[in-house]
Image (cartoon, rainbow, N blue to C red; front, side):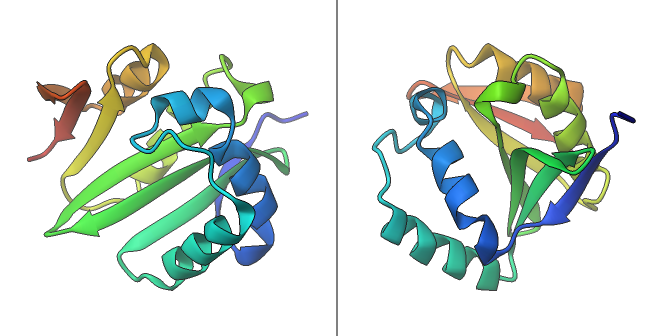
Length: 146
C-alpha cells in the first residue's frame, strides 16, 4: 500500500456512497441541516450540484479506495469549503490531506463554517491556514485570504 491520496471529480455513480456518508450520524450532527436525507432528494441535489459550474465535488481516494469527499462553492470570488470523512477512515489525518489537496487547486480566498464542538474540522481548517474570524449562532467562521 502506497498511501497515495488523490481527488477525483464526483459523478452520479457516487450517489449511494455520498448519500450514506451524508446520513452518517456524526456528519448529520456537524451539518447545518441535521435531518436525514432520502435517497431521491439526494440524487436530485447531486445532479444539480454536478451541473453547477460554481460547485466542485470530489471523492478522495486512498490507493483507489474512497475515504471522503470535499467540496468547494464559489460565490463572489470566495470559495466555501466543506468536507466529510467516511466513518471507517476517521482519525487518520485524511481530512487534512484531502482538504489541503483541494486548497492547492484554488486561486482565491477560502472560507469554511464549522459547528462548535467539531474539533476535527477545526483542526482541518487550521491545517490549511484558515483562521477563526467570527462565531455566530453556534457556527465558527474560518477564513483565509479574505
